[in-house]
Length: 125
Image 1 (cartoon, one colour):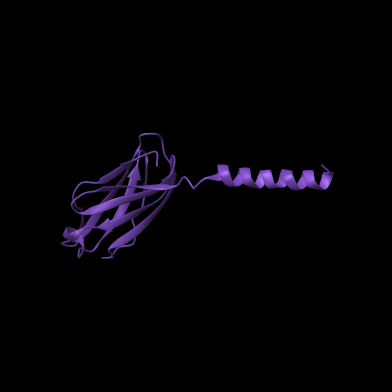
Image 2: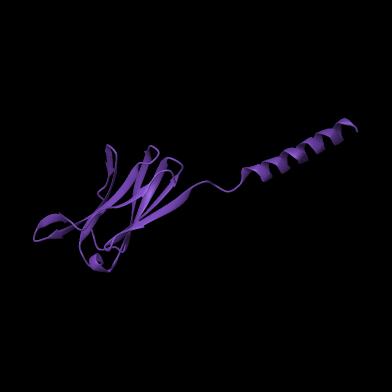
């Protein structure tokens, strides 16, 4: 086999190996819900990209905001309002087994009150 054919064959094998072993992206999502909202955590292994907060019927019309928290950190508040789904960007490395929790605060009687328990997912994702 001449040099040109060897280079072409090596290139074809390298391309095939890259395709065969690349596989799909490892980012995934885990969801946990309460009666009031759902926490859909998007991450990759022990890295949390974002949390999508989805309101359930009891709080759909309540004016409020979401906050995401874990062991020694928190993100938020999200923008305040009545939007059905809100994204909280996290960008946080977590430890194996760490909970990533979402909570909701509503404005009632001129004061902010936490509504219901937090919804938590568990790393890794």
